Length: 293
Ligand SMILES: [Zn+2]
Image (tube, rainbow, N blue to C red; front, top):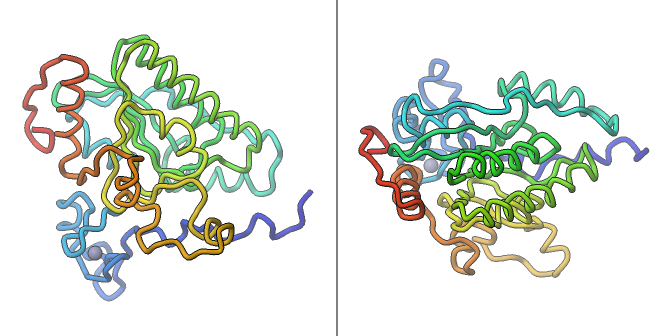
């Protein structure tokens, strides 16, 4: 058993760009952008899809917000919601961390899968929720990603996954690492079935998730400013004894190196997905009004 403290290291993702509630004004009326420190009225922030109107920072979304911002109203049907992680290694504090994440997010795990439509085009959609233990991929998240692909094959539908994860979930040890192989094999089956697979990388898409299903799409999109990488900047700096550039492992940096195909602002994502899905499936999109119109 490792000594106490080994796994207490503060997460490198701790300073999440989640906007903070401003103390001086009544609860929930305004927030402070964690990137530029400007004060934003909550209603303006939400109207702007949680993108800071001052600096353009794309703040993290919950899975429910992402679904609401992306798909046609009333089209979302969740699948496999009953899957729950177990604690196979009896890892210290895993039980309580899981319980807390379930309580905070209202989700069974950090990855949500369902069927939906974007501009009338049907798809299988999967969305990570970073609040659930950093979106880490344990047995349940991996199983849900694999089932999303299998659902796509069974229904002959394209698959779109929004990624946000610190990587594999260490509390499930090798079982988490095995999800890399499982999700990669499922993505290969989807490709063999000649069905489109689109990945939208959001902040942050790292480590075992980037090194498996997040990198295997036919098309890779990313939100502006999203952190995307394998080993984090601090590890790379230690290993190479070099200071990485300022924009290291941002979506923009990755775009310049051909790792992603396009950076798409949040507001444009539904239309971009509709255009891509229409081109890839040969189906015609319809104007559904609102964001997706
Ligand atoms: Zn800002």
